[in-house]
Length: 330
Image (tube, rainbow, N blue to C red):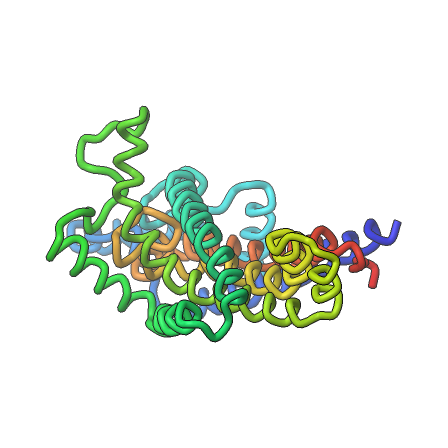
């Protein structure tokens, strides 16, 4: 019953914060300079008579609802969004729901592969450096992870492009697929993975550096505990002590940083997708900002807001899975 009450409270909290942030985001973007109707009509201003253009402008503004007062526009936007209607894209001149499907899938695939790479490398590496604390291997890994964690992702992207696409032309610089490549089949999948290699490499560097250091620090703290000494004194195998007893109790701080890293990963992919021209939500967000396509921009921003709010709840639930002593109601 306690978990049910807690989840209900968190759900109400998410709804409240979601609406507050939606109000702030809506009015901030509406206060930005630029006219979405002019952006949509484009060059028609110069090719039409002024009165004909004004008539078309007024009709388009009425269709988009931008001629209404801002509070009316907000409630119309919010009610439509809650029913799955995210508005009309002035840039693509299509409903937003018809535009975001493929980019969202591309972003999710890119981030999922990055997460897999990061966890497969960082968790074992963090455990190994903790066990071999202050050794040559540990010090070498610490230097490399600090460098990877400190360098901005766009610098790493430029270095990766120079190394693996210019000097040693192994991977493509941009795009999701090769021109004329069919999206289906094994060949299409391999071609997409080939194009994902550099973006995933760049996005993984900081994640591996950060999570490796957190796993190492958490494991070192746990390995000092008395119950670890007792487990070793009982004659348990070292692997059992490390991976069964120590690592599980080190997961609480790791879960915290991992959850926030995953949330930040989706937001951070905005830069990487723009650098590598990856057709994802990040690139769409940048293009929407450049073209004053506020329906696209607001939809993307609210997606990231919802992801962050949901991440908090998932993190709390993950605590109870890794440590049964944690109670949600507390």
